[in-house]
Length: 223
Length: 236
Image (cartoon, rainbow over all chains, first blue to last red; front, side):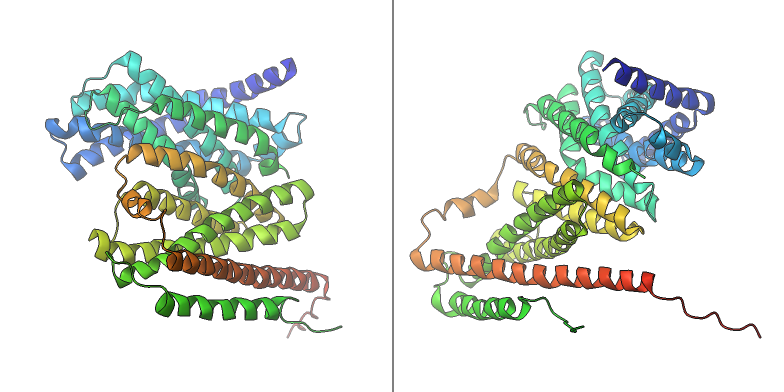
């Protein structure tokens, strides 16, 4: 158990160090997500009176798209560089590779949202209670990172992987998207949102996909 | 070496399924009376509901084949999973199209974001993604492995999608239709049972032929791989 944790932390440190040096993924997903917010503003002509109703959806579309666009690329890059092959042949439990990747993806997403969410509040002029929105963001990021990591490890070996990855991710995360959007609407005080145990649904989704990922990841990367 | 084109039990099963189809169609058109409120369009019900049942059964078979493949690494499991995914997508498409045709005269719309319709559509996307993943992964062993992982991960989503979409759409117009049915008249119940059995037989026939075809493709690939390469043309 201790060696396992050490392995996960070492792999996580490796991913974060690479990210810290290049800042490739962070820059890409941050600029991309900001651009999604701005594009939606033109597409839907977001006036102050509808910002509360459509804002949560727009914020989460911006976040969800960063999955295949930014996070999903890390596996293809590792595969192209040959890192993945070396990792798999090293005496490390495969699920440790999965968990470290989920953790590093989540860290990058959280860092990006540190700027994205304030930008969202400013651009659409909405009121967000930080204490209420942070759990929604963290739970949403965790599930998204788990699903994206598992599926992108497969998509890295396919033709047309740039198209295939979103096609695989989006239907699977429908429950997550519904839950985070509704939970965010509740935080915004929307009366349209249905008051259901959305956070509970998110916890269940995250738990199912984290444990499924741990269980099946060894079949994905076996060479 | 005997040359066999079809699966062993193909013809008998296809004959039974074919006969049952004629019987079921005859019952739908001539035996069962039209619904008093909905009229003749309600007869879509006798194909729509069995097709929905087969769609779920097919995706469950994908799950079983996927677990079987990862467990035993026998491509026979994978052939079952892949064939069932194809047929499942076919029947899900049928459910959506038939539902649309039924909804237009009854609900006055081709589509509504009702819980049941929405989760069926999401399911359709998951398994179309499965077929795409299979098609876009060139290596056969890897394709089988990835397919098995997605067959498990995708099916695990079915109950979560169901609940999330149900909570998202509390209004459930379909419930009106469904609630009217627990007291199905005998003719309607019998016709539905016959139609369901028939569609299940059709699914079984499709499975038999599709799995057999995959088997032949695999054999062919092995033969081609083991065959002598043709002599290289002499340089001019």
